[in-house]
Length: 398
Ligand code: NAI
Image 1 (tube, rainbow, N blue to C red):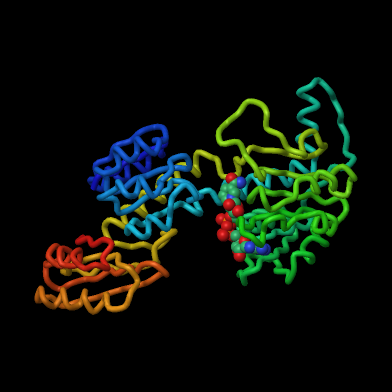
Image 2 (cartoon, rainbow, N blue to C red):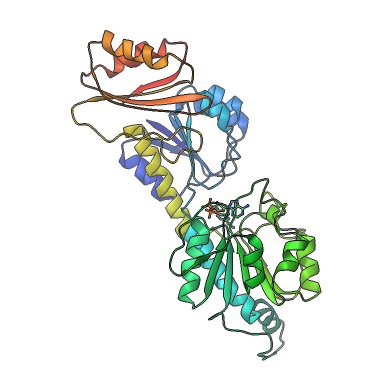
């Protein structure tokens, strides 16, 4: 296996791939489309972060490629449906920075309760304003979580350690952890919470879900935190609610438009300069621990995919996993999702005089993904024959 690792992927991921005997080449920066097209043809796996674009042209040139590891959360930089049509499985690391985001949320709840951003700025500027007015403990206060998924649940647990009362709203049925209480509507959460924290994905339903009406439905003197996606909150409406004093503070980490890279000036937001507003540059998940966890998680997933064919956790393949059966030959097969493929595959296996010991197939709209254990060492011959089928996208003997 030859692996190309780009964009300074954490050393732990590199080491895990080398420990498997994979040949790893790395480059610290992202590669442009031209450069990638010229290089990718030699590699079975490629590891990227958010800046390298895996376009249909790159995939066209990637004759040996079986998997892409996105050592990050988002996968917008990858042409996922073109990848699936070429039988290339894409993985990311959706949970590795969950804890980092949750810790920042808790820190910011305390910051907002104590107006810490403003006090710190004043002392830096030479002022001394020792006041208790508007400063509160968080113990006994109500935290409302909107989106009780990976991050929301962690936030809820940590907030309870602080002695907060926690309620949440989620569109899906979720098991409440600890003493956290589920509410049937967003409005129920907004009307009772001293702090509202958003942890929803970016979808058509969440776009602008915190507009003027919802902000007005929040308790007077409460605070809003958004460390989810920038499009979820109407920032002009939030700025008005802060200026009128309806809200006592806000912490915002994500914006409708964010600079592509770091800039030392020029970033604009309607929230700049407002009292008790903590603004951060999308750093919720940016810790060294999260980077290391991402390196480990994605490299481990790629190794499992190469060794066992497991596609669990993939963002573009049907999820298939089959436990090992000693003494069998494993074959994995990606094919167009059309009738008759299994019949052809089974005929090929029986032509080789082998029996299928175990077989797992799952399909999506475009493809079928099959893992199969054969009782004879005929994997290579079976794959050769499968590659001749017009419906085959890729076949691999493990
Ligand atoms: P998740 O998918 O585990 O949880 C999201 C939850 O929101 C799910 O339970 C889902 O059912 C719920 N949901 C979806 N639509 C909803 C709606 N309209 N109303 C209420 N609930 C709704 O996602 P996870 O990992 O907890 O991430 C949450 C957000 O945090 C995502 O937007 C992600 O992009 C963002 N994020 C931000 C980071 C940062 O650096 N600031 C780092 C990591 C994630």
